[in-house]
Length: 206
Image 1 (tube, helix red, strand yellow):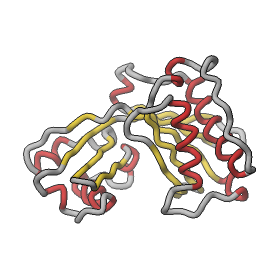
Image 2 (tube, one colour):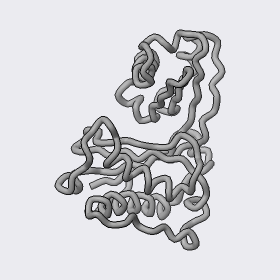
Image 3 (tube, rainbow, N blue to C red):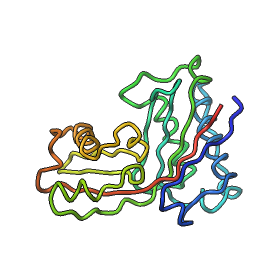
Image 4 (tube, rainbow, N blue to C red):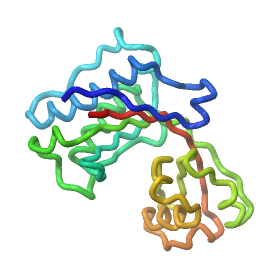
């Protein structure tokens, strides 16, 4: 499938930090699609020539890979913290989004041409200090911040893109709590840890 690239940058990247070149974005999108295609054909994943890719792609980075089919979510898997080379992280998360997202059946070959791939490269999550639930709601930045909540073993995140469907901070947090398998009002409980991050996102476009 021939694709172009649509890009979106949050404030952190607009400040000139950690942004990828167009060539790097194209490489990651091609790598993600080829990884999924090879898996469908029963082939080995594409090799990554670390000596020939850019230093930014070879250094540790965290990413999410999101698949959509005719505008609907078809899979999304990612890493919150960098622990392996960014190119490898995208390759592995692409395969996981296509075949191991528990919300969906594994992707089939007949769906492949109908699926569009989006890659989000994450900044390192930072603790968000807040004084009570109202202060937390006020400090969230809709459309800018990805949010991680954690309480004990329960942990979940929403990418900044989720603000498009849940623009109200209260509803955003309620749904995030449910995703973490907590009651919807758990953001009001003491002991909740909150982290925020930003993303550079880019996607295939027909």
